[in-house]
Structure formats: C-alpha cells, structure tokens
Amino acid sequence: MPEAIATIALFLTITSLVYTHVGITNIANSYKLWFQEGYWVNYNVVEAISWVAKAAVILPGLVWQKEIWQLHVITLVTSALLIWVSERKLLPTMVAFNTLWIGLSSVVIVRNLL
Image 1 (tube, rainbow, N blue to C red):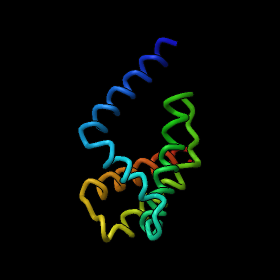
Image 2 (tube, helix red, strand yellow):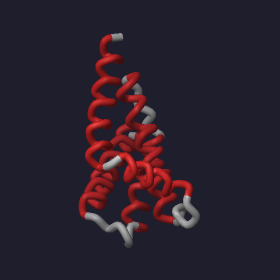
Image 3 (cartoon, one colour):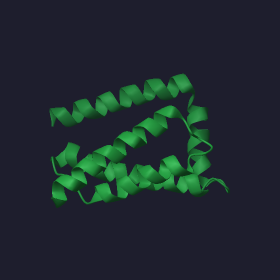
C-alpha cells in the first residue's frame, strides 16, 4: 500500500507541475484535438494504435512482471508504420525511438519463436 500511495503522489506532483507550467488551458486544448473533425487522419490513427500497443506491452511487465510477447508483433508493425507515415512529423527522436522499438520487438519475437 505505501508503494501505491507514493506512486500516486509522485504522478500527481509531476503531472501537476508540468501541466501548470505548460498551462492547463493549453493541455485541455491539446486533449480536445482528439474530438475535432479531421484529427483522425492516417498518421494519428497509426500513432494511437501504436501507443495503445506499446502500453499493452509495457504495463503488464511493470505491474505484474508478465510479458505478453505476442503484442510485440503489433508494436513491430505499428513502429514501422509510424516511420513510414510520419512525413509531417518526421522528428529524429520519433524515428530513432520507433527504430529502437522495431529492434526490441524483433528480439522478443525471435526469442519466443526460436
């Protein structure tokens, strides 16, 4: 129980500091983009699927120390797609992160299939 309380306190503290610094209105406007017409174009759909897939890989490992290796097939595909469809957001950090994730997923998939 102390870990849960400390985790929640740390999360709320850091998030509050960052949201306050950026501006609550700016953060709210950012979240509102999800509900605007025209937001869900090919890139943003791939990005959302990729984000959910990566969270599905990471969270069980962090919370329950369980690996669902099959989800790496989805993260492998979505990471490659993100680099491919990222013509408008071709940021080096995003390309490098997704390239790294392709490597990570490849290792996990091969380890479990061979």
